[in-house]
Amino acid sequence: MNFIKSTLCVLTGVVVLACGKTTQSQKKTVETNIETPESQPAQTKQFNTEELLDAALNGNTAAVDDALKNGFDINTRGEQARTLLMMASFNGHTDMVKMLLKNGAGIDVRDSTDRTALMYASTGPFAPTVKVLLDAGAQVNLKDNHENWTAFMFAAGEGQIEVMKLLIASGADINALDVDGESAYDFATTNKHPEAAAFIKPLMKQ
Image (cartoon, rainbow, N blue to C red; front, side, top):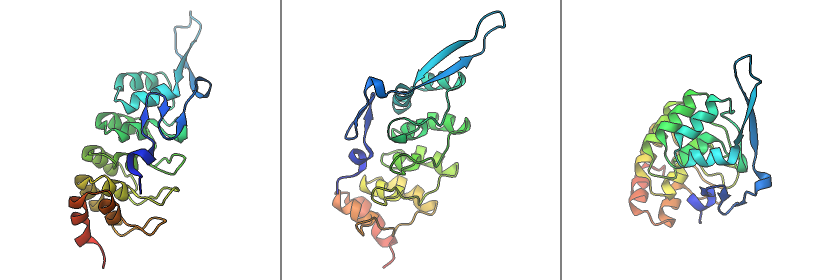
């Protein structure tokens, strides 16, 4: 059961590891009209979607903020239908997540496997990011369409106890099962996170 970061397809640059490579011809751009004085013709500024997603992944707030101020659609989807919020959440860039949510980022938007920003954030030691998403109303028990995994399962598989506590406080289903009939406890055990497994076990329905 190798899921977590590899299955989420860790992103670096414009290369999508384990999901294929984005070629130059596949990169999307969004054209935005920039307001100029009436005496000057309107200019068009182009933004490369994959590069902006990469900026969000790496916490480059300035680049993302500039694009948004110039009309880039905050919910534009890139490779695998991922959004800026998903990418920022994946690496726990809490301040950027706050900024994106404040500017209208769709919190429960799903990618091509029905994963959400909360699922992405739950894979790492990013309790502050997870809390921001939960406080903003992220649905805690959504499942992906790949293996029926939940945010709690992702957190358990990575041994993220503090994240699991936040998810539980928001109503996470501890006993949810994936398509193979495995639970978050099984994920923690299989992925050799004994502390996480010990945390989960007494909370499960017998």
